[in-house]
Length: 452
Image 1 (cartoon, rainbow, N blue to C red):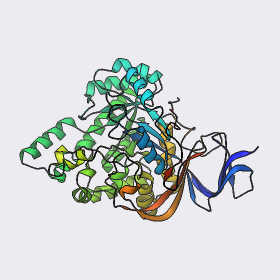
Image 2 (cartoon, rainbow, N blue to C red):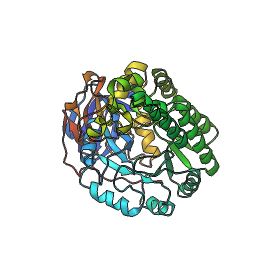
Image 3 (cartoon, one colour):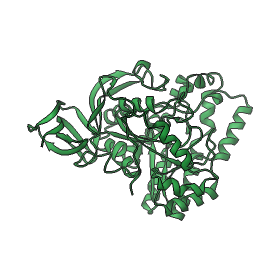
Image 4 (tube, rainbow, N blue to C red):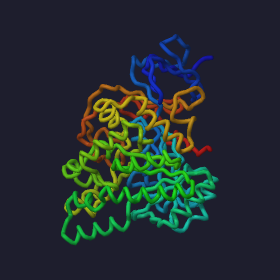
């Protein structure tokens, strides 16, 4: 067999360990994984000289805003940034497009709009809102990866109360799908926000004080109850406090089918950073204290976090600048897909001893499993898609706006020093990013569907 590509002499990382070896690719899939550096005939041979070779990251939590809000990001620049960050599969949330993806008409509209835009592979979430229960079955038939719901108000995506959570979970269970939940307490956050604003508070800390950790914990406890009652698979997104992770871990031990995600910004940045950076660091749930960040890392190191997701949520710069004197006016979201892997390498692998295998499990394999994309994605093994990221683990660099592929080159991470750089990203055996440039045309990325 004449191989198409041979990645030779790498530190190959799987979710269970690492070894010095290589990977052989034929027709876009992994044909062979080898130990050592044997001579293998291939059209292209890349000598990696011990560079780290990871499965491409699977980011199950992005907001690319297309269709209807492409001036915020769009799949073209969003997936370019993903490629530059070692992310080979993105899964787009149903909100922040116009209108949101809550029925098959809007799903088809989104699929048509983004078909010729992506440079990495992608899949789509459906939404659960207060009037679309009858659409869940048809969305599931179109093989969305799952459904997203909010317990707290979002600017353009209706929240759901407990009755809809219960009804939605029963249906999700019957469809053998899953429900991802943004879990914060609507009443408490509204009460605290109004109290702070009535006192004239407009500073960054007032945003954080309006959404304290205890209200997040309460909301998660509530949806865990309904997951246990209905048997539905639940995914808690962007946990920002360790008590949420520990609640989920305890529920797992009781047999509740639940997983939990955390995000790089909640593992790197804290309230002091929020005050220093300003509105670019506004997000929901908000950044927390340094003590909370360190405790959240302990949950990661203990293996209690299931997935990492960027929660990439961009906007035009003017929607951040309006919050410089009044944080309540700023858009709440952080642009972070391009820096997710460097952030986890820097703060996890180098600073806290997170193993490369554990990073791979949480950033690649587990998201692919959860979203019905495994073993096609998230793993390096024969028969899987040849999706890889080549990392120089010791390269030290500082992020500048010129590095960014986002439509709007601003991010809370600009100025941050990283250790670990993406050198090459490969999707289905084709290099999509190398030497700070995108190497394929938009439309190379393929739509993926959930498999059961």
